[in-house]
Length: 350
Image (cartoon, rainbow, N blue to C red; front, side):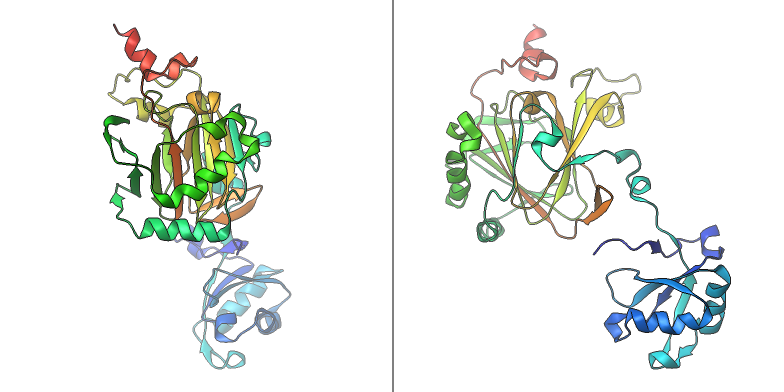
């Protein structure tokens, strides 16, 4: 369901302001009162231009009048009193206010959202919709839910092949956890037979991280450590959608700490000196990061419960689970993106 055009006041000056719109609780389709019936009853106080669901409960609505005095008359007559036309239900009524437009809701996160990789136009990004079937998605989710999760601050993870250490932001290649589990075989088979992937289809992936994000939880801007993983990174989205943002910082990743002691990550979070692009990742889509996209662009999932795609709201009502498949690097990275590369940065110290 999309967001209604009006919302309940949040308090303060808004709470006491008059309006041509009313927020009404204790009536709606969930208790057998249709929107048409509501419009008819409130129409006795003046011209009604719309009746909207206030939320997904089915028992709260917004009634929008043509004139403020009509709304005031309805509120004075019906608030806190039994309404005979609604079976004697007592209505709780307040003035309502317009909901902020999508651009205001997004605030500083306002960025055009692409639906395809070609529209995104970042070298090395590939997006494949419906990469697996709905049945395969269900089987993958059941498989990981049957295994133990490790809890981080805001999400849960599972590691296979090699464990990624978040403190070191790297893997210990001497600690092999075993072969990838059999339940990922359909994904690996699909990658190997995908003609659109070209040479990427031949890579032998040996590390899997499964992330579970609760509704609204995102991910801070980062580049997967160059020294940890090879060029191709595959990420399969399951269960819920999200928007992934990409940032190309003009000064690279490895900024010195600020005079006030802020870390590199804090500097990145507060910086505005970067290019920004974003893409929508629906369930069952596969994202491939390679080349410039993998080595030089930070990727990031905003912490939102509602995303906006071309002015249309998309609620993150369910968890999102991602399967990230990579190949562990066995030597130093020698990519051309030196300013983002930890291998070449560390080498330059000596």
